[in-house]
Length: 563
Image (tube, rainbow, N blue to C red; front, side, top):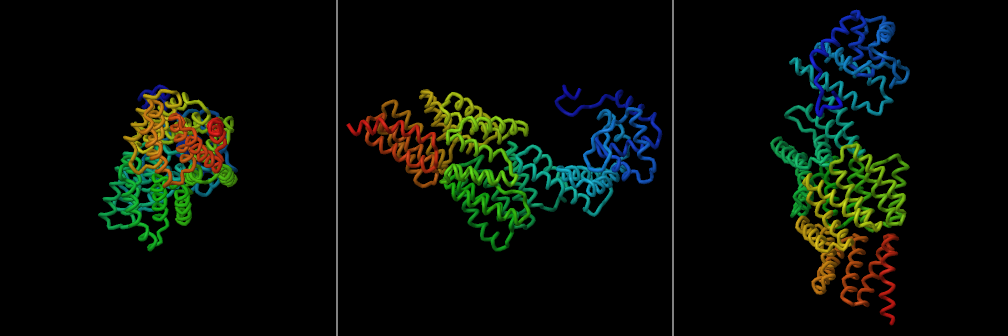
């Protein structure tokens, strides 16, 4: 039934009755022990049962009797120094648990959480487990109309928030959303837990629920304004602006920059590190749109400093890696920096992506493909969403670099489909330009022109990478059609945009494309000069693959000029 059902399995009443009848045959003391084991879960420990049944002197013999009756089985313990057991079937555990009254469940969940807090320090998922049991205790108390001083809900919220934040850091965004939404539900209606709400907004977006994140950010602005919480209001407005930048990009960058000019001095004056972390991370996004990737790196490094002071787990390493990858940092330095993070025990698929693409630029394609295969497996296991769309775009970039434009076009098309489903317009605009590039390499000029136009339509007017990319592809298509003047104009416009950025590799690409446009126009000397400019930048970035290809294009042009 569980395998065939799409949602939660509902156990037929006849089966429930059968299980209950089976348990009714147990001795009262045995059943009581079994019910207390059920509070912990399908797998439970002798010490937990003893803690939940302090008046039962024969816990160990009772458990042995339950093993003989094949209700439970011995199991490897998950806690040191304990004896572990497992219910023979999860449905037996559920039947035992269902027999408990809500009041008893509330009491036992809370007592189990206190016991586990003392005995489960080695559990990696301790916060998540404690959060669940405290949450359950809270839930049953509320259903029974029992008042408390809020301490139980606050404890559950802290544990769920901590585990949700860690899930977000490791890229498990679906888990992060689940945990953080449950934590938010425990916050009193008239309170705002700003750090928690910021975490949830990020998790929603990366889980592919950008529109929900934007709606939540707008709601938070309203609630913070009504509460007179200026810091929360500004942080919520910043997050709203950040989300608009990705979902509704036209004009969003300038508006976010103006808002940050207003907010940063106030945050600096109050010394609110959590708010400063939010602001500097958003500033990094402004620099991203502007193509100032070294500044993006610096902004995220400052955001990480404030996050540490605020005791947040976020280091923004994925964004720091992106700044190094696209900016002026040579690939050897990027790889050394990634090695430093790995030596600290930090692993994240976004770091792996920057590593594999850097390796590809160095011509180490086998290593790059091995890493890509592993990353795709991890991302798929975690639910895909925005992370999968982004990874498909990275796979397209890898294939294009490896000289496989057909695969690049296939991956790029799938990435665009996902971006469209997710409403991620800013990312879709750049991916459309990349798809146009792959189609040009396949000599599918009409389609390349169509997707270049689509990139221009989707991209914000101040999105440096997209505005360069569509012009570069359209220029080459026009040059192939003999429209040399218009082709050169677009190619030089792309370079003019690049001159305002530190997109070293992209500017090199723009020079290479100008060289191709000029070569198609029969202007060999000028084409050679453009390719030489591209080569200098590829060499500075240590893009060995593109440097070699550029030398191959440059050599015959220089030979022609020499004659």
